[in-house]
Image (cartoon, rainbow, N blue to C red; front, side, top):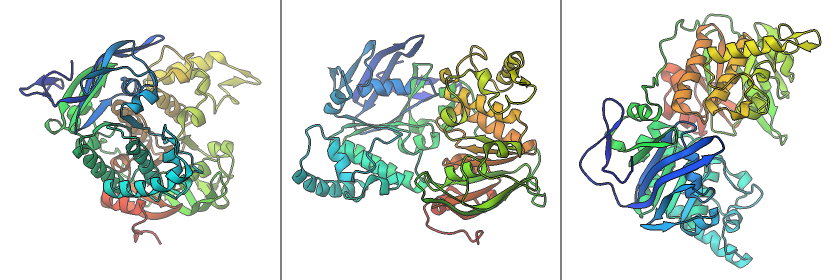
Length: 532
């Protein structure tokens, strides 16, 4: 269905229905876009149109074709079929430079900045005409004025490595504005922001579109799409499902359009409430750790995790979450402190010792730290168990058992792949995560450390992963959920710890946890009285 058709509304049955009226004039129009890769049609006749002066959200499951479409619009790919129009004129982009010259810019989820350069130098580096030393002085003044105008204040002379993640995102936005971008594509722009920083970004986006710019907002966070966008285009299986006015639909409607069925956002009631008097499954006492640069990353962290408890750890990226997870799971040797599981001390700095103690780990980087992407599903599900029976007999692997075990886990965790011999790198993000969760659950752990377990997944896969985490807690395991997604923390946790600059600055019961309170703690604005 073309977005040039009359505007859409979501009917009770979950499919868009037409109502009278005409959509706004399009700044960007993509018609009948087809892009094929070997064995895959990523875009199958996609229609998309974003108007002048609007925030237009682009939604879809992993593999729905969003990234391919944005790569076509920014000149990274060329379509096999279809037409792109900019301000009513047909355009052809042979490279990203062509798209930038036409006024189309993109802020990627993973920033493209040189850490050792200053803000001004990074912006100058992106200028296609080159900027001399004298011009950099003028550029600093221009960036300061632009930052004040759009609410993107950042010191032009600061080096990028000195900036917070939110400030680095501002640099990317300033780069695009300096290049004169009239169409700005933002890929998961709030993934690393606190709620307050996200709200400030939304104010900036509204200021941009008020001047006639067009913003294409790609996100998995439906409540943010509702908060900031004017219209939403939904892709499913590489095709356009339809375009809806944001005000006319709910997040439930949008989720139904994305996956073709109802999605449950709230977890079911827990089978067994957490017993605060129960003996802790895990005790972490005074743990400190340094990052890869040798700088303090975790400072005297201490907490207890009880059977059946989901303990959330909230914080903005870079505040010690990764180092804390790695210290607990043996991937990083702490500089101080101790860890006990089931009352017994765990040898620090040893992954094998942590695993033997009953600590399972779902790491943040699932494809490179958690799994071996070039190996098969069967090989990956025994990576932590191949040294002992039944995966091996003496020095030899029991390949028959390994294939049967993998097939059983694929069925139990609904891993969709041709078979157990499929390389993990060929799976979608959701299926990769289910392989990882299946392997860790199969070890029958006492404690499951899950770091950003739903990052980058679509709503259907998110629903599945969250259900598995709740299931783990209901079976009496302790779950340490480390996530920068406050919606996820609030939806799942029985209690929430907040990390700021490596310290636990808040220990908040779920009943008292709100996005505002946690966001304030995440930004270092207050210290909870629950923390001594």
